[in-house]
Image (tube, rainbow, N blue to C red; front, top):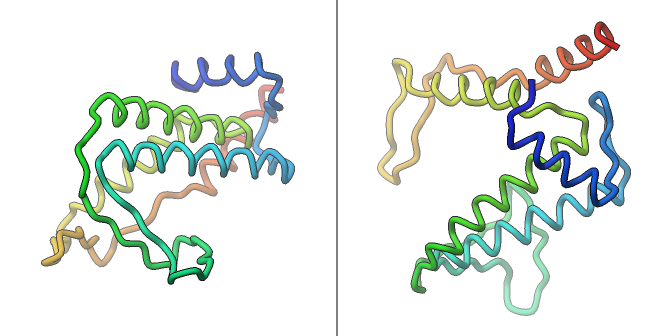
Amino acid sequence: MPTPHYKRVREFMQKVGQTIPEEPEIPDAHTRTLRAKLILEEALETIEALGVHVAAGRGDVEVQLTSDGTELTFEATKEVDLEGVVDGCADISVVTVGTLISFGIDDEPVLEEVDAANLRKFEPGSYMREDGKWIKPPDWQPPDIVGVIDSMRTSDLATG
């Protein structure tokens, strides 16, 4: 069962003519590119509102931003724009839930699975490093995202 937020975002997407699949699928390249642009734009606006400067690159050399290997620097150097932070967080939620919708994924089961995995990070054997990063316990298991997606396919087929 999707959250009320999901339902509102879905209604918005329907009104602007975006494709909304009924079951999990990979959208076309145009849709994936749109979702990526929206997520990054909203994230950067929120970071700016937090008063944080982010830099990537080496002089005039273009650096591809990836989740591993790209070194980013973050420095809180500006005044915080509270309204901008709150608006940015809400917009990030809209574009990320919209991305789930464009993939035919219901948000609630995914959020439940990820939240449960995050809370398991505090079980015995976990600790905080000197730099403030929380280290998971040795037997920690990541969220079963594939299982959640598969259950949506099974449910959709059973009710369709």
